[in-house]
Length: 429
RNA sequence: GGAAGGGUGGCUGAGUGGUUAAAGGCACUCGACUCGAAAUCGAGAGUAGGGUCAAACCUACCGUGGGUUCGAAUCCCACCCCUUCCGCCA
Image (tube, rainbow, N blue to C red; front, side, top):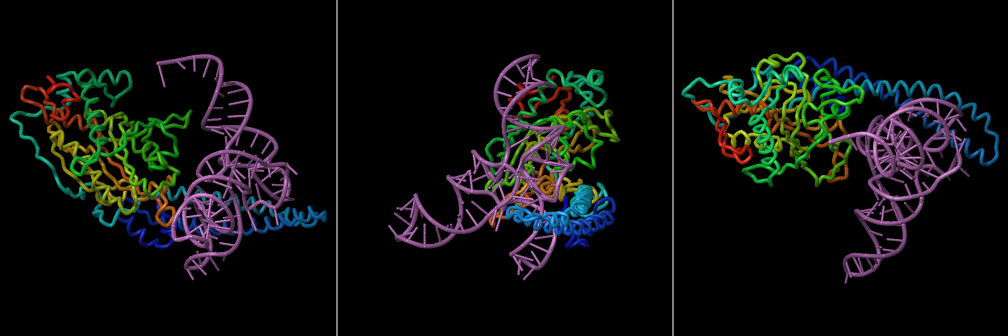
């Protein structure tokens, strides 16, 4: 969430920076300012009363010890109780209201973020490789999967429902090979050209509400989450949630930064109201695998870390010989908590379209403030960390791109060189 | 799921309803002593909110939330977490 002190100090600047986003946030900012002023007023009154009571109560203690009569002074302070109770309820309510309001206000876009109203205004920053030239009409991954029995949508629908799949035989092995290849790539010792250096995490797949509030999925996007109400737990929509929250409510040492984590998890999303759900094969499903990259760093480093995070995700696509492009999200298309985001889109010839396989974002201190994630700076002061994350990469769509880009005229699929040790064969079919 | 025990600062560990402004110890920071260090001595040091140019200062925080009381770490209630044992279980 945004810093209330900053909103109080420069409300017009905050409003101006939020103006680039979808929706009008002016009223929301005014509401939080009004609430903040009422809250502080009530809080000051309450504290004044508490101070008086503490002083008098201490006097009573001293007098009793001295054997003096205290009935008069006790009667005097007895009346404090009701006023304090009322003021306490008032401040608690205002405090809750203020937090709720702040949780509902998105992050301010970074100054460098291109201004625009929707995805059409997202600039393409660069591309790698080129669309492969086929001497035949390239097939969709659905046809290729059916030909080689790589996955089974019908039976997955029978046992779970639509928009689920079941990988089978070599298809399941390919999925597993990709997971291992991605994790190995990100966790190997870091080098400037090859990336790496992330610590592998295998987190819980069910998380509590506090964790989801920390990374902004709650309270605003509750309808996208699978929920187990009896236990107060939610299925993770992305490893970002458990991994970023590892250090929630912690004060880290500056020397620990940056922390770089990678995690493979399945991701569960209700996709309520989403177009194309269950009709485009592996492209949009309720459950998909993903290898996530998460960084927690010093504020001065977050922009540089965003560049290297994106580069680390790109290396995967390069290693697999897949053409992709980098899109920067404009202010109107930016995610709720993000201040700057790059999307990586891989070419899928069977779809004739680019597919988003990674979204790399710098959240600055927005998530850190929500989860009280701080570090002690060189002056011994607590500062909020900056957090980042990006897919490295989403598996299902990478799988689509792999099949569709490396398909051969005879319908077989060539496995890219770096993946062969993991898959155990040079091709499928 | 059942039973018992326990949750106090960075760690450890006291704490009969009223100088708890949380003892003592360890670790830490600064200073003194020293050529330097160790030892010793002295001082300081938590988090959050309010307040201030900055301070001073005020308030809250002893697992969490309620309650009793003029006053709660301390008494009462509910819940959460940890440990051990039993049950169940990959």
